[in-house]
Image (tube, rainbow, N blue to C red):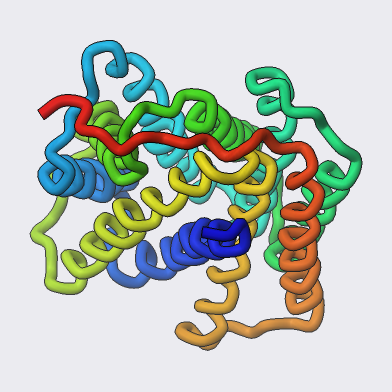
Length: 297
């Protein structure tokens, strides 16, 4: 496949993640962030394990749980904390700093050089997200800010390490391992920290099915496929598609207003994503080639 095809398939993942806010607020019970994260990750991971019939070998267990912690357990918990304590615009703007963090981590862990064009694209992307989502109600809560920055750093570390550590299996198997590991990490936290869920309605179940099967299993398989084929900085810039989708869905589905400033922010984000692909292409390593084998039955 061409690099353009790889970019488009990878961008589809964060574009779909942009529906998470709408589904969470409109279709799921409120006040159970860790439990819902478990129900999003663990069933999806187990379904993929059943489909791929592949378990991580013993040598990969430590890395699998570390990646599952960074990409899912820690990231999702901190994301919920930031969402509860900060306006959505502030939380999303902090999350957009992930692209800059990836550039720094990729330099340290992969030896990828940092180029001015990549830094400029990441910076303008953060500005675009701020214009898209920040409003006059923005407030600064220290715990919320720490959670937002921690969540961005967690996802950035997971992205770079997922590029550094490539097992000899398909992206679908790699996704299954990480989703299951992240769900297992979150499970005891949900039991200890939150009360049992109330009886779930058909709408609740539909929302969980969307977030688990589409918003986790399918999209993260595309994401990790892109991580293996594209440069870390290019992949991280695609994550900025998520807030753009969230705003568009809020406008179309919930009837929320879309101001000229927000429209300008969306244009800046999309332009930054495009510029980031060009800037990071010159910095990246060649795509990793993996053999698709069954690691353990």
